[in-house]
Image 1: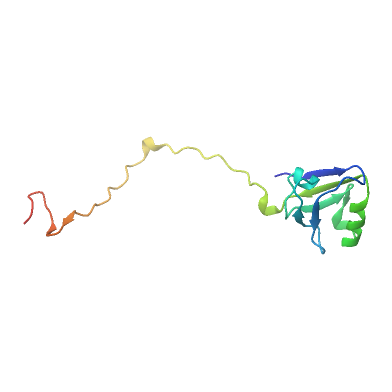
Image 2 (image 1 turned 180 degrees about the horizontal axis):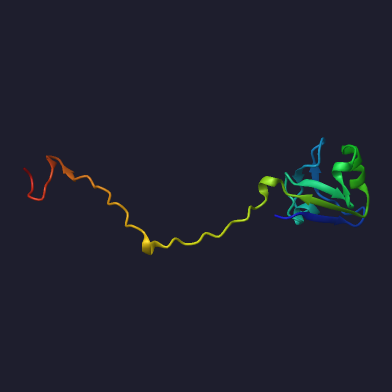
Length: 122
């Protein structure tokens, strides 16, 4: 999943998610909130607020104050482990030039009296 941009135009707009107190990681998402509508999930990382890089902000209290501003635009990214890795296409093997596989030995069937050969019981 790619980055998500959410805009809150006025005081009535609610983001609908909570962050860890010591960093910018989303810890909860309210069903029906803007974050939920934009498919934000716990683990997403707040990257910027109104174009200002959150890494450059002094501490969580500065981030909290900026989150109260309206209008406000947030950029969030999914955690690294949730991003889809590109998959390389795999070419089908050309089997026309391959050796046939080795036959696998099958054990003889055993009845109550022991092994049965082609001539019957011995």
